[in-house]
Amino acid sequence: MSTTHSTASSMAMTGPMGIFGGTFDPIHYGHLRTAFELLDTLRLPEMRFVPAGNPPHRAGVTASNEVRLQMVRAATAGQSRFTVDDRELRKAGPSYSVETLADLRAEYPTRPLCFIIGMDAFLGLPRWHQWRNLLNLAHLVVAHRPGWRAPTLGPLGELLVDRGTGSVTDLHESLAGKIYIHAVTQLEISSTDVRALIAAGRDPRYLMPEDVRHILMESGCYARKEATPE
Image 1 (spheres, rainbow, N blue to C red):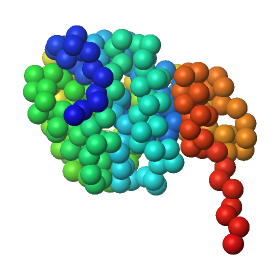
Image 2 (cartoon, one colour):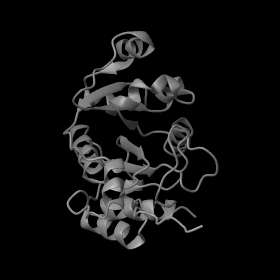
Image 3 (cartoon, one colour):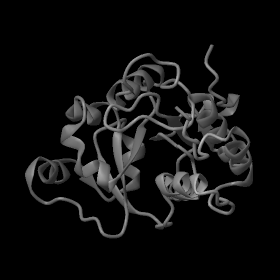
């Protein structure tokens, strides 16, 4: 049985759904601020967090699926338009975004889907599995951060000419196919740095909601592992 905690009201929504994927290992205020700004800017009735199960383009996660899901639920509990979807965690094999979007499209055939990615991920899009099919399933919303430039040449440059839009209305009036780039507030927090900080015995307080901090500290998932004597 799915443990997605969408409420009855969110299930009845007909407006665009934001889809925010990531390993969330751990989730922190950088993730939450980006999601909140896009929720507001794009006028989304729902931003759905989808923790990655087995991302094929990244090294394995540190915290267990159970702990990561627990942290994401704790982090999003205070915002009624944030929901959590655990489908990738329940799936065997690699977690390909195109397959997750295909599942969601089948489940919500009449709702626009807005797939949130960072500019760094967007620049690497041609290396993704069946990447050209993503726009048949959803809009791409690219969270622009300082230091990154949208491509003007090559396949991505051509794609932006053909599919780019500066209109939020376009994301509401069609189910998929547009690329929308939006600048978000840059918070200098990364999951990698948080893990390193905890492994060094330091306290991650104020980098994430207190409930998330409590879960990760209690679990010990990022504590430095002592070498086993031979």
